[in-house]
Image 1 (cartoon, each protein chain N blue to C red):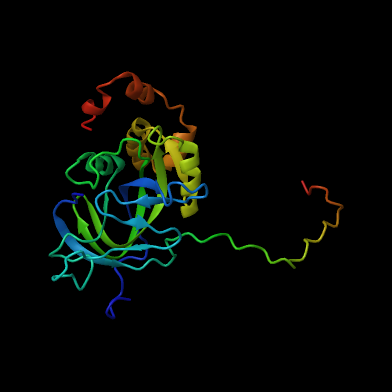
Image 2: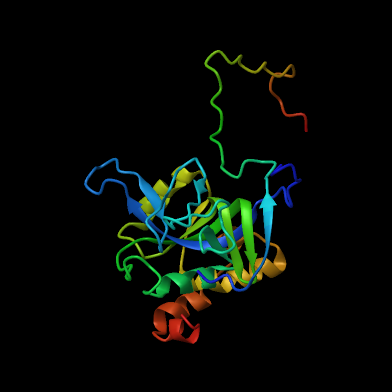
Length: 204
Length: 44
């Protein structure tokens, strides 16, 4: 109940976003891996929601996300849109993710939510399903295992498989993870590896 | 991240916590399940 009003929904909004995975203490053998936002310095806590903050110093929003501001935890409709965002170096912190594990995935948003035509800005967020892009880290298996600390399903997959199967999962209602696991998928994965223009053809 | 033209503001209060909780550990003195009376044979 917000301000005495009934909520508009009792199920979190689920969208897609991109993260990088980074070790908390790079040289420590028991270092944990955390999800990090790509556009702002924000580590996503394990076992607790990330709460959005307004970064405007003087004109901080009273209600976050504000309608006259751009604050909030962002999510978009699908993995392609999320990946496109992080591929634009003007929008991200480092500008390059070479050698940095890239994670795409579903995120649950709740609390106050600004609804857009292509996505959402939310007050609270927590990852729901994670897809580690194969080959983006030195050891995908270890990174994926460590990301299971978030207690959500973690799948290692190729970008091509994720992008091609997501629309099928959406249309069919079948879980994407199940399709990735059980579909004899290979055509576009091979295409992605053998065709250097695959990304350009996909608009990526 | 572009979310297009913003159309409305809603509030969502999930009935179930979106943050997964760890499976609760069984207490140490949890009683052992009783053996089946038919000696453990399957009912089928």
